[in-house]
Length: 226
Ligand code: C5P
Image 1 (cartoon, protein in one colour):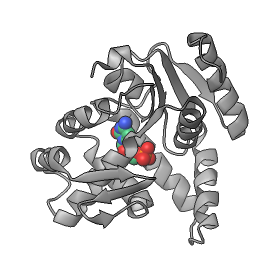
Image 2 (cartoon, helix red, strand yellow):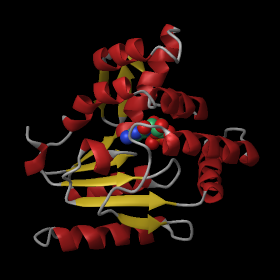
Image 3 (cartoon, rainbow, N blue to C red):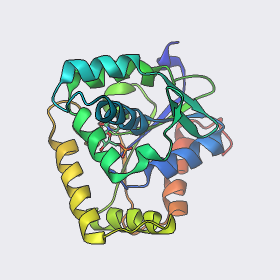
Image 4 (cartoon, helix red, strand yellow):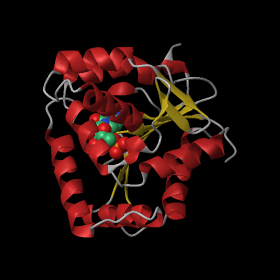
């Protein structure tokens, strides 16, 4: 399907910026589909880890990315016959995702997966390069940012709520390391795409961020009642 004819809102930003939460809330408000592109990179990272193929074998990793057998259903993610929904959310899985995401071959292999999500009545796409590479013709582009400390604090609270034992200082270091790799890689580096509305969310609550995004959506698509 031609994604240019489908309404698309892209939400890009670093890890912990709240883009996943905002993307899901927005998609729900609009009744649109939602793409969590980070989950695809996390799945590839998991495959590489499980198959012990080494994080430097770009061609082999891309092959796995292209052929992976994934099913997204009712909020759960299945890789082959295994429910990996929680497994791919760990910090290690995020770091492994960021390693495989640095390879152009892997990004290319995941392009089709991502573009297939563009379906009527519309798509909210969350990631790092949604507005710049995957859906460059999206009508609304948002870039959500927040300080590394604030993003680590949010992650800390999430993990604590799940009863996990975490260390805030380690989280800040991990977030910085991942940011560094995501912002400085040669292919599709993390940065605000041209024409994006940049929302600095360090001192904003979820409702305030969502309202800013909704304002932009309403002004771009005046026929939508949201
Ligand atoms: O968003 P999430 O934290 O799940 O993403 C995990 C990793 O996947 C990121 O750190 C980034 O390296 C990579 N990623 C990417 N492009 C995307 C989405 C995620 O490079 N569109």
